[in-house]
Image (cartoon, rainbow, N blue to C red; front, side, top):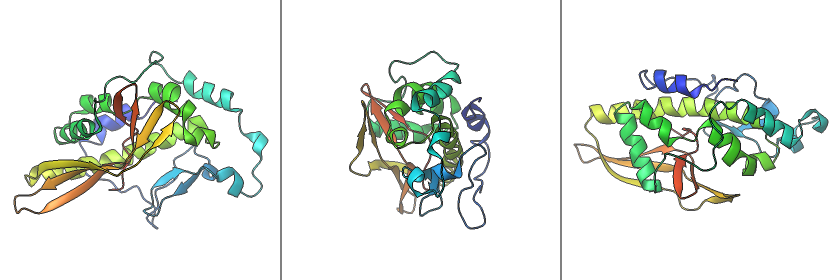
Length: 228
């Protein structure tokens, strides 16, 4: 399965904010995603469901690939060199969020690619040690969901960045919610926001990133999902 993120970087930045929610404000389930493996957040955003196997009546456990084989199938789709550590990103969480905001305002798709976890990093570094994988989430659908949520998040964030640029809002600060989670040798945290000051002195806080990953002393965006 070819990654959809490069196409999203090229097209979504140039477009206005889309609305891919269903009539009841829930984000639709992408093709190829098992509905039993996902659920909706209170704001309608689709997320992996860690207890989907237990709560789905009649679900046949034997129909799921063994974890090693399921992971191998995702890794087979990777065309880039196998990574041993995170590359790109930033050396602090605050610097990462600032760099992402700057790239959004400058429609710098090349820069955004260096800030977000790649498919190779997802398949070989993050997902094998992740909580979703340990809870039974299948790797290939997990990546498809990651891409779908990133597309929605990039659309929303780029729209707000354009609005801020047009209104001459100034980046005042970056803030992230306290706490985090250790997943193997990775640490995940978030969400994170940019704090903007408008010319009329109004202050806005935009939560443009849901999750940041820290590994090997580097920080990257764990997808582009957000609650905007």
